[in-house]
Length: 344
Image (cartoon, rainbow, N blue to C red; front, side, top):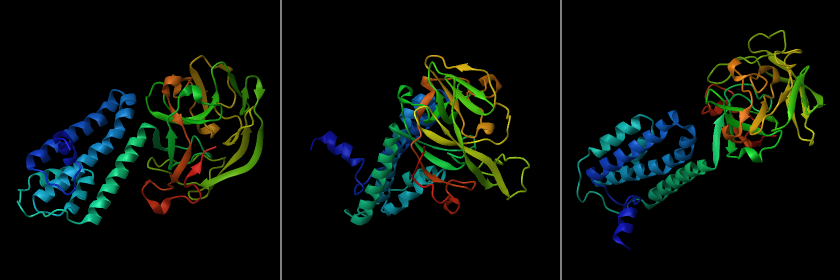
């Protein structure tokens, strides 16, 4: 093995040791790289999307170096997991780098099972981060896509070229002016005409049929970290009561169908002018039609207007899990029946 290969492998050897000099060098480089990647989003979200997966391998190198520093100081490598705690991890890393060497105190190979588990977890974490080159993960903060997507759904979004999208796809994209990520259903492709007439979509001059599906019912209570109250069919219920919205199944010309909600007749955008989708743009609607600021509304009025191809991020594939409470991490609030659920 060449000297350069030996040097490179030493950065991933949990049986090894690292001097304080190497500890500070790796800590400085990893911290700078991570802050650079996180900060570049303020300048270019596209660039950040491609760099963000590198945070995983960077953190893996930092954790292994911390383990080596602990060994160099005659301490157990188990303490390295402190570095994964937000904020406290920075303090722990600096404290570990300050530890004095204790020559001869560490005897390799140590606990092989623990080391193997550590390698496995770090490798899995790094692989998951690298997968972010191909798949994004997002959570749903609002109710504009009910009943398809609920507040608190955590979704997988394979990155997709806009030219590969089809009518009916649920798509994540950047807002045309606000640069936030939005999610809606694709209704109109370039050249299509789209109009709303009495709450019904008219696509290229043909009304899309809607078959009644009964009612969509949910608790009238605050939802998600933003504490949104759901909109209901009048009259609004008491807190904790049933929030009811009429539901129908809308069918596209190719036979693809999905559920939509209609909170009130003659809603704010139930009847519109005819929109002709320009080249290189797309027309989106929310499934919760009376609670969605979408392509029916101009960006100047808080809506989307036509969305350019280059703003598309990807097509939603499935819901990983769904949290009904204020925190995604509160497992006790996860909804039954929505784990790993495909999105129609």
